[in-house]
Image (cartoon, rainbow, N blue to C red; front, side):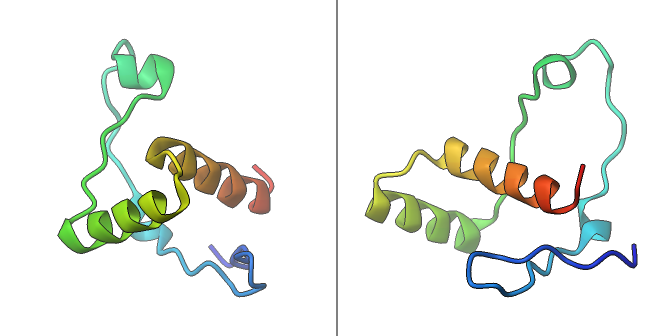
Length: 78
């Protein structure tokens, strides 16, 4: 920790609690480990927001999520 948080498109910090994102190692031979396939549990409110945002802009949810991850990691210099 101690790194500066990445900025969103408005120049504001993306406040992501990295500790809440920790995970347990899985089977090294699983599809998710080999190909990066994963499931997300968003909860009702976040799913509703994501559905509306993507529907309003005709955006594919998985591509938006992938873009957000790429942007976050690029800003972290990973």
